[in-house]
Image (cartoon, rainbow, N blue to C red; front, side, top):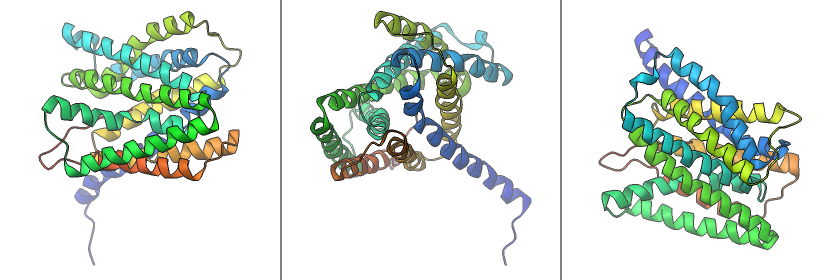
Length: 303
């Protein structure tokens, strides 16, 4: 009979905490589209409040960990600030797209950065993808085609929503690239806090240009959005990224579209057809396969 020593239990504890953090992160992030739908502001304005309400909390956590702004070099400030602009554009595109498609599709396409970021790695490294990664890209292409085709059958407006969420995934890839450079010298929470601050003014400007309603009558949905998506979701995901393998993170991402699909069915009666289910499964499998560790090692990321 095997005995568990305190030392072995302590070694296993971080992994258990990381798995719990991954579960909490993906469930919290999956509720983001719901809060956007029920908020009584414009979609970009809701993104502005998501960032603005979360920023003080993230800054306090960063300062509480011992981080100080003077520790950031001038060039890193530039990378993080530019990353914040990309994040603002990502949220603006995604939040508008959420209102034009199903919650499941919005979540799937919004997470497509996990597919585009490795593609960027292929281009930068000037190396062809492995056989498994190439197969994953093929699956993702077929799955996305099924989802987009199904959206167009239901309504051309749904297709526009899907395309906006897909654009958000591309913009989020740009955010990853810039934040990867910033993370070379910054810890996760301070980097998230500074990039969050840098997103505030661009989002406010975009909401005003679009003529959206900015000041809400009811704050519940916006507070929920800020806490669920930015503080809990992003915070827990960043913690998990440093503790778990890309494969485990990729599998964890499958929680989001499942929770979003169930939420859309219960709250908005969004029905999923066979093509939706097949397309979603293919994209989900691709997200897992493309994030498998390369034989010589690979980096990590994620929203």
